[in-house]
Length: 355
Image (cartoon, rainbow, N blue to C red; front, side, top):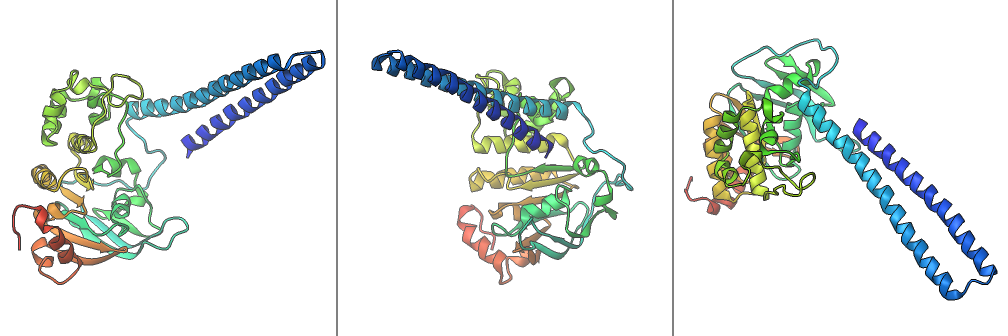
C-alpha cells in the first residue's frame, strides 16, 4: 500500500508539472506567434514555427514521462535493497511464538474467507494436515487451491475461524515466523534484476552459500543450464538494469524458483503450479526428485495435472471452496467422483498405466 501510494503521488507530481509546463509553453509560444502574425509574419514561417513548437512539446512530455518512470524505479530498487539487507520483516509485538519442531501440523478450524465484494469462497472449512504429510491439492480453476495455501502461509487472513500451526493460532504470531518455516513457489514468477545467486538465495552474494546454491540448482535440474552461461551463476537476469542480462523461458524460470525453494530448506514446502510450463513427463520427473527432498517434511503440491498425486500420502480434491474428496490416490481414483474423471482424462500423457 505504501509503495502504491508513493508511486501514485510521484506520477501525479510529474504529470502536474508536465501539464503546467505545457500550459506555460503554449501561452508564451502561441501568444508570440499570434503577435508576429499581426506584424506581418508569413504563412510559411508560421507553419515552420508551429512544427518547432510541436517538436518541443514532445520533447518536454518525454522528459516528464522519463522522470516519473525514474522515480518509480528508485522506489522498486530501494525496496529490493531493504529486502536484501533486513533480516526481519515483521514488526510489533505478538502474543505467541511457534515452538520449534521436526514436523508442523496445520489445522483449519471453521475457516471462512471471501475476497472484497465477492461471495464467500470458503465457509466453515475444516482441514487437518499432519506433520510430515505430503498433500496433493487438486481441482479446477477457481476451486480455492491457491487461496488455501495463502491462508496457510499467513499471506491472507480468514474472515472467521482460525488456522493453527502445532496448536498455535497464526493470527497471534509474528508473520515472519510463519514465512520462515514455509518455502513457497507460486505460479506467478517474480525475479530480481540481479544475479542468479541472489535470485536463489534472496541475499547479497557475499552472504550466499555457494555450495548450497549449486546443490539447489542440481536438485531443480537446472545446474547444467546455468553452467553453460558465460557468467554461470553470476549471470544477471532480465535486461531491466543490464543490457547483457539473460531472459529465461517460462519452464526455466520455474526451475529457478524451485531451486530457490530448495535453497531455503524450509520445514514446510508449498508448490503452487510450479511446473505448469513443463511438459507432463518432465513435470512428473521433477516431482519425483522433489519427493526425495521433502522426505519427513510437511509439503503441499498444487497441480492441474495429476503427476504429483501418486507419490503423495493424501489427495484433497477441492470444488468451489469445498472438499469433495479426501484420501490416498489409490483409494479415491477408484471411487466414482471428480478426481477419477480428471485422472482418467489425463492418463494418456503418462507412460505408466496406474489403474
